Amino acid sequence: MSNNTNEWVNWIEEAISKEHIKYYEYEKFYNFNEIGSGGFGIVHRANWKNSHEYFALKSFFNFNETTAKEIVHEIKLQREVDFHRNIIRFYGVAISSCGM
Ligand SMILES: Nc1ncnc2c1ncn2[C@@H]1O[C@H](COP(=O)(O)OP(=O)(O)OP(=O)(O)O)[C@@H](O)[C@H]1O
Image (tube, rainbow, N blue to C red; front, side):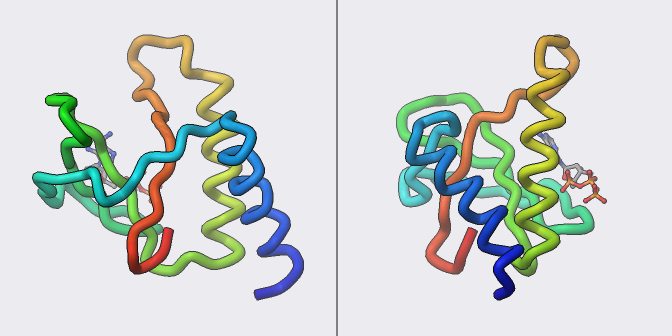
């Protein structure tokens, strides 16, 4: 990993520790179903704890410099547009046993 990678990873970790981004315990997700895939990874639908609501869980094929930077970019973009009712909400992040 280059220093640049750490910059984006640090951004995410700091946002979680300061509770700007909610951290979800990955172990509390259940009822996984694969619903799609994109350039960065696979997307699953799952329930969390006793919420009957479905969450879309995005995983990453390869968590590298580009991925971390793109995640930060998407979170920042999402903040600009999440007032619109047609925009899907960003809930937070979870860390699975095989990475982020
Ligand atoms: N919130 C969601 N609800 C339902 N399906 C979803 C949701 N998010 C993603 N998907 C499904 O997963 C697929 C991949 O989504 P993802 O956002 O990772 O990639 P993308 O935006 O389609 O493409 P790219 O990675 O090139 O930007 C989508 O095309 C869609 O089928």
